[in-house]
Each structure stands twice: as structure tokens, then as C-alpha cells.
Image (spheres, helix red, strand yellow):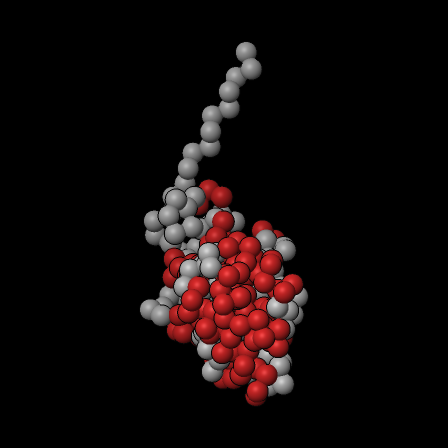
Length: 220
């Protein structure tokens, strides 16, 4: 896909999802970091359900570390991989306090050095928390980048780099949010319906699927 077509694609997605933003609930950068760590292989709904009780009790790294792993696990036990995530969050809290004065670092390498934080998580924190035009490649972004022909690639890092190359500057800040919303609610992995897609003309997918509109019932 060329840069001009990509620009039209994101312009249309911006109109389709004018309020596109992370669906994770948080008040601070620290809470954003914790929420994104917890969201790995879990839904935003399940994470929000957990943090709704966790964050009021443990709003800061100090409070989280003081509460300890058992208390944290009690709040997040219904989230996938909860034991491992609890250990990682507690370790991260300790590092934030010992090395960064309790603040979330505004640096990719520093973020990726934290337990439970990978490239996608770091990109989300830099984008959502600090306003950097980074692109977080999750399963939706990866699928749509390949399916639409926007940035065909074999892995997420390659996808990220290709997206950064092709996406016009004005759309980079919100690009992954638009793709996530499109992938979550329209261009799903299965049962996708191209009839509901606003970027169907720009999309290069070879196996588009259109559902016929339901017949209008006669009033007579």
C-alpha cells in the first residue's frame, strides 16, 4: 500500500472512531503501566474489573509494594497468568522506587527492562502516558496490517517499523488505536463483514466478504 492510500485509510478510520482511545481505566502513568502489564493475554474488561478495586487500595508503587504479592493476587486472580503478573508488578514497583524515584521512566529501553514489560507495553506507555507517536502492535494491529496490505510482515517488530514508514505523520499518534478499534469491532479475526467496513476501498484483502442486507418487510 502506498503512503497516499494509507493516509486515506486513516482519515476514514478517524471519522469512524473519533473517540478512539485505550479502553483500559487508569489515572496515572504508574496505573497505566500496571494495567498494560496485566492486559497481556487478557481482555481490557477483565483488567478493568480487577483494577477497579486494586487501584483505590494500591494507587502508587509504594502502596503496591507495601501491600505485597498476596494482596495484589487477590485482586487480579481472575486474570490470565495472574501469579506471574503479580510477581512482575511487585518487582517493577521495587525497581521504580529504587531506580526512578517512584516515577515511570520516559525511555523505551528503561521500560523494556522492567519485569513483564515488552516492546508493545513500552509503546503503549510512551504513547498513552507521554504523548509519543509510537505504534503498539497487538494481535489486532498485526492482523489488520497484513490483511489490508497496509504493512505486510512476518513479525510485530517488522510490522511496527513498516507502519512508522508508511503512516503520514498526522496519524501516527492515534494509528494503533484506530487499528485496534477496527480489528476489535469490525475487521475481526473471524466472522468479519466487509459490508460494515469504511476502508473497504483501500483494503487490499483478496477474500473480502459481503453480507447481503436483510430484506425489507412489506407493511401490507
